[in-house]
Amino acid sequence: MKTKKIWANFGVRDLERTTKFYKGLGFKSNGASDQLTSFFFGDENFIIHFFLRDILEPAMKGQIIDSKAGNEIIFTLSADTKEEVNSWEKEVQQAGGTIVSKPEEFGEGYYGFVFADPDGHKFNVFYM
Image (cartoon, rainbow, N blue to C red; front, side, top):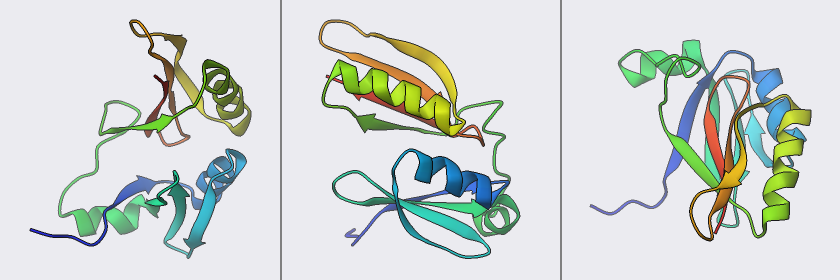
């Protein structure tokens, strides 16, 4: 099987809040509508669409989990230095995210932390 592109779709409750959060972290918008807001992530412009839950759930053909009560997936955002990891932690807090775990060492040469966006979607900021 060959595919041209892959992207992610997340369900959110408030498009304005989601847009403000990701713009606050400096991510580039990929556009928006009354049903979704979308952003580019990383050098290769991985796309994450954030759909209103009421729009996404019927298309999923099943219930969307409560991301604040459990885990769905975790995306890792790469950092170039430990200082950048620490800076991201501050930026996430200022933008309204939740720090799930403070920056810490994960064995020799690994350093990072976990945060959740306002809807509970988790991201790992990681330096190695």
